[in-house]
Amino acid sequence: LRVSGGGGPGGGGAGGGAGGGGRGVGGGGFLFVGGGGGRGAAAPAAPAGPALSAEDQSISWVWPAAGKVVASFDEGKNKGLDIAGKAGQQVVAAGAGKVMYAGSGIRGYGNLVIVKHSNNLLSAYAHNRTILVKEGQTVSKGQMIAEMGDSDTDSVKLHFEIRQQGKPVDPSKFLPNR
Image (spheres, rainbow, N blue to C red):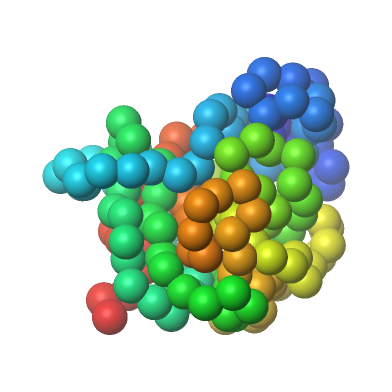
């Protein structure tokens, strides 16, 4: 599924590809291909991507869920962090932004929420039990957006991604120490 962005809300875009469903979502040319879950040992973290703009540097982040990180970012195997938890546990927006996608149409991600934080950065929250926000809704940092679950995966967890200009980057480089 292509998560593309034209200019304004709804941005358009043709779908298809690995996600099926053929649905475009405004958001700056972001592309999701393949599943969100990764298995195995983590490799050293990749660089955070291109230099951040002043707008991107001003974004304040929080951890999207409490729990143990059970899989780290590995560009080849896991495009984000997997955080173990309990079914129904709070999933919160890691930063303020606008919900660009809320649904289950992207294969491998289950019930998924995508939040656009700037023209360059978005975050994705996968495998939720329940989605509590709607597309187009503005969310605050720390606002509950979903309940953790095991949709389209084998255990209860949150798969969390940050994408910079469409490319997965290591979320731990953005999140505060804990």
